[in-house]
Image (cartoon, rainbow, N blue to C red; front, side, top):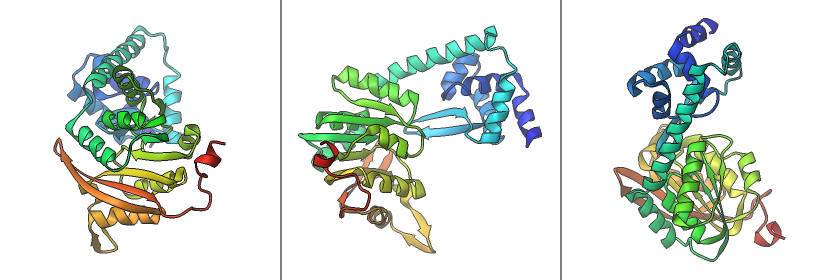
Length: 308
């Protein structure tokens, strides 16, 4: 494994990429801009580093970022290697500055152009499903569709959003400022799941939760179980999932996507009220609205107890 790591890291461009990704998560365009190389060339170097286990590729909504692996041994190897570099080296300083400038410019572009037909369709669906004022507190996990964030903020006194990445959080804040609504935007501790730490930082029981993120399988099941514990007794939960990701075999029996999503909700102690297909921008999404089936042990208490 050590030889594989050395082969992957022992090339000037890849060493510069590791130095950047050790400082944060960056898109291919950010990295290409920083290194003044073409995106296809940078992508090839990133693929080698990912295959060696030194970097990880993270998808969140419409963005893909690269960052240093969380594997203890590989991360320790990279940091030990980078400790031999002079952080004041003009090339590395220029790389960091260029990457940050590219990310800032892209954030402004996203803030002004992230709206979509799919986002508007989902916002209309949640409004029809009962997301309307006056709600006390609403949580949005994932900010892939800013229309949903705006709907949640305007329907509640307190809106909290948890973004998958630094980029997504910056974009969400910029969008909220431009549209004139208030929402506290936190950055997730993990880009793929809703963690206990995230829920503790959010800090209260919620009258509505929107899972504006496309996850499937065990990750979705865990997320539903976690969210169930922070719902007030009469709260509503909205879940959005790509239709094709729900199509899989289970114990040699093909489970229909609608049945599978109902089952996942039921397993988490949630009662599905409505399932609606949504098609826009080439996406086929299944949207579900659910409520807590019954009080569960360890569930966060209702509004009166949680806000006393």
